[in-house]
Length: 415
Image (tube, rainbow, N blue to C red; front, side):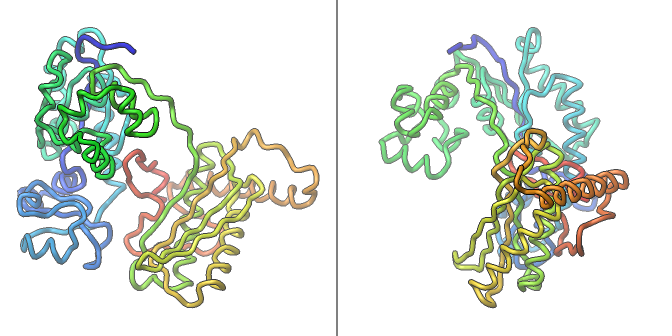
């Protein structure tokens, strides 16, 4: 492994992104505590809190009622993912003016590789980026930047001085620069891994740093432990590219949507959006899974085999049959969540025609051609102008356009 002798990575992490975006977009919210919620209902939780709200104890996951108790003057706007995606692209455009983006980790986190003068002048570069973002995107969207020999340490640095921080970790600073942190402050050490490390007597970063690569592999029970060890010690770590394994969406249903009819309507919408994403990526699916949750940990799951399908008709017909099975097996229980997954992916262009399918194969080909026409029409008008069957969007909209770590929705996901 190569061990850099200087700074090679810049990691940028925006502060309270959804809440700060609302403050940037809505001047009346600036300076006020803000808690963004997924849909406009009192029966939900905060998904992002502004720094003013955090100071009063509101954080991600705080129930709305508790947020109002902790912070009586809090504003609770419903999330507007399409606006956050627009801001995300504006951020990337500004970053690209200063340094190429190596990897987009999420809607509010990105990593950049530094070369040449960018390495020796990394701190000045970070300050120029901050000034450029304030001018191009808005002064109420602040970002914390970490500079380090590799991505793991740069991300760690970006989280060490929030909000609006700038932290530099040089190879010669290790392990002292991170020794004061909790082990869970190091990216890659979640609650479960933290508990495992503490059980092994590694309750400080200093002790964790003193382990060997072999010990780390045993603790993680995979090669990921060695990669973590290498990153923690300042080595350059290259991870293999991950392959897309599935396309899917899930949704918590609003109380008045917890009927079989509306749950099916939501599941069909989720399946259609997942199928459209899959087609844009050039895949077809051999399996479809449906999961329904009923509260208190109870649920139903089923899977259907598909003929390497990419068209809406084949996918939605299989979903309807799965949902009928669910009703037959669960009776009149009211689902609170629905999730659909297309997996068993194959490149659409590599499919081999089923010699024994006959008319069924020809019929599927016709439905694929019709689906492609529908996609082109929707793309042309940037709206869902043509659908297969009725389309009913659940409260709050944005079904299939969820923003998650590792996935930023395409603009087309909002149609």
